[in-house]
Image 1 (cartoon, rainbow, N blue to C red):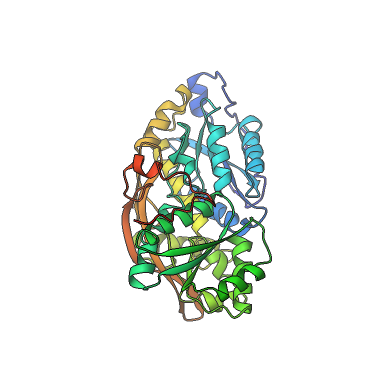
Image 2: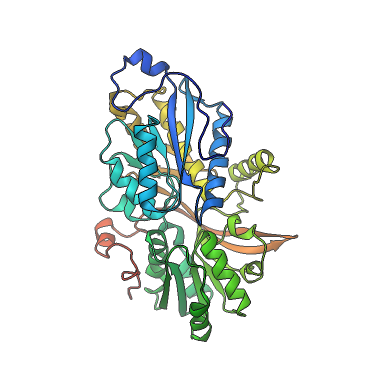
Length: 423
């Protein structure tokens, strides 16, 4: 099947499973599996969403759109990083397009909305795309929602410690988006940094902010030894461009979606100040791992002339990782989605896979990934800015090594609960 990068997919003909259909098992098992994709193709993360669908398409092509003897039909939908829009599009995929499984969404608040929606479904499964809010699986998890990608808090593992102990920085200014995913990233950084004695001042901005000049002026006048930037998409580009234009010279510490080819591939003054930026996250452009090198080589061959980046974006890799979980479980049950998908969901929960980065992935009791996190640095290599991994923490769990009940007592990450707790 030729799956094009458009907001609507051209669907193959043939029978499909309606929600709650009582089709005979033989008919159901011969019908295509309908996989619904939901990502952000509108708004600030559109470039990341486009790249997510590139990698999903590439990996479906690799298995010839077939698993467990059944054809996979991929039905695409688009959101704009807003929870209500994501929920409406997910409902359409389930109720009108009759998909069996949803792969998505991309952004944090969207993930929480789909987690809640999944609880209302019977015989359907939602597997995360790249949404990274911690509460999606940590608090009130849904039995129908699975996440093989790590969350925003996990992505900062080791970064606060590196800034305090290795870089010797004792005070930082944190500029971040005022929504669920940045809350998780800030919480993860602060949990390490503040417990070591670090001090933080926070500057929040709603998603879609274009003018950061007042914030930057305050940061430049502050005593902060570095700036922790937890924006992404067009917000991140706007902040970094204006920071460069304002002559910002403090060392930069990046949130995970800042240190990404969706940022580095754009031209402008922001690239000058991003060189040498330190960050944490689940991927890097350069990782000393043969699995990753193979994945990047295949991506470049497939997309070099069709809009692809120098290497896959963080969103693309997360969608591919979650797709691997789906394909693994479908193969384990020979494509059987009967019995309200219970055998399939048991196979998902038990799955142990290898991510495109070469990292081992397994799920905890909340159906949340335990996997590796990288410490990265942006370097100029030739004429290209690349994110290079220089450290790796293996098997990071969702509570960063703390007992779950102790971690839960810290409360949900928010603009008022930043994780900055002294030891």
